[in-house]
Length: 562
RNA sequence: GCACCUGUGGUGAAAUGGAUAUCACAACGGUCUUCGGAACCGUUAUUCUAGGUUCGAAUCCUGGCAGGUGCACCA
Image (cartoon, rainbow, N blue to C red; front, side, top):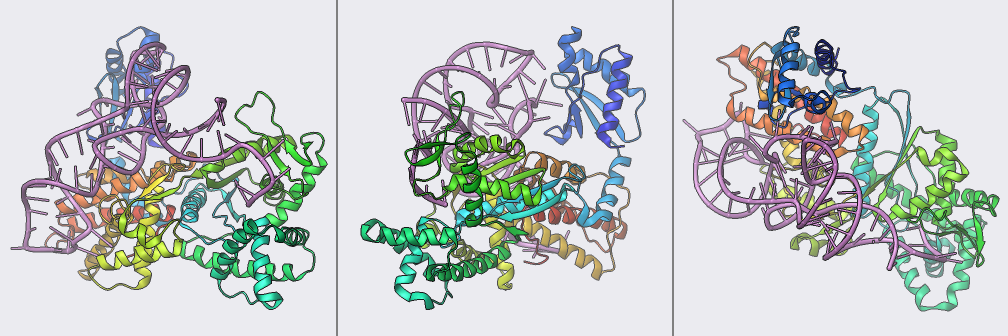
């Protein structure tokens, strides 16, 4: 039986003994400070009014009633503050905890709260022809962490990206490429595509005479009609996907499937036409969705424009159809920047009328923007920096900082760790102020701090092994560090149910700090005291496992040396 | 104008309605003959504002102030 259930039973029987009707659920939580015990409950305070007693007196009565049938896992119970009942766990409880961590190793922290559920996570959706920027990195960091959290939930997880491969903007770029290179264009450099996009946008604004040609290109691309532009388009798409995948591999992501906007657009267009009139309405040559009057916060939007092409809204309707038809998710999570909240309110409101469960099964996660503050890196990176440029700049900082020579790969994993950490430490949806000289530090609250602690433990274990001292848990005083370690699975669970990677970040920092204090206060590997060394190495090893698993959930590598 | 989101030390952030609001950076002061100093220990300093709900509010409700974002053929 889990410890919380155990406590719950104890409190319920105490309440029964006092003739008090127990509430449906009794809340147990960890006090902020370990000196207040390992668990506490507010049950006395919440019942005080109902039974017309002073909360503190009531707490004491409950405490007295519980004390009669304590299990050996509980050392003592106290009443504190305005009426909290605090539980202090005993050695037998903790003595089970560390060996369990050591045994489960990479599986420690996995739960079964979502077993048998199918969960789809869509993230990192980029626009072909536009480069992979730091904005995409934010999206990716959050998305990838959600993927991994969901994998720890026991769910069957599918990953998907929705690349934007078709739009008027892309037609403009193709126009430029076609004009410059003709149909024997060889796509071998993504920068050429990015430049063509920028140039095309400019040309289109400056020169109205090309509008007709661009529209024709767009029509042919939408219709997938054999043509020189389609040929170029396919080449570019292939190149971009390869580039996209190489960047994502570096960041630790993989996608099971892609659904392209061109595909979703056609599907969406059909659905909308089928429901017009009805859910959708014709207006000024376009097809629009007008929400009910009571839904003031939802705007009217065009789904099919007057040229007959599906807009972003229609594409997302098509995407919903394809997602649910192909993958059958119980929960469909998608990650975008927060500016798109109103857009998805419209899409889901309309979508709900097409198929009811689309809306109720969808979860929209958002991220903010990355603002740059520091002088040094801002000037080096310019406006909206490319992910690769930022990665390179941060890797250089890491290298400068390093006291010994590591491989470029290690530098990069530290740089990625630092960047991902600063994204995931905050609640998703907020803008992030990114000052490479402070927020992206390598000290204190940082990815490298966690990685460093992990590497330090690895080298301790190695040192022990050299002296033939191996982790082996003995009984001993229970350190504050140990009192934190067993909580990892609860943290993972709260991160899963709350879609909250930041809970993992906060917890890992606490663990790393607790370990480093432990390290500072104790000689861990000590040849003159083998038993104690074995015991401390066991605790260290358990800490290392938790750091590693936790960093995995954040999509951050845990190097053994750095 | 309408709608949505956000206001936490000097700075950047955390906190299922709970105890003395947590952490880091910066500043100041220490540890150190390093089991890896990207470390450890300490000091200073915080919930925009006015009400309300509650045993109990950074959190929930109402008003105000400040900032951000979105509002029909871009994605």
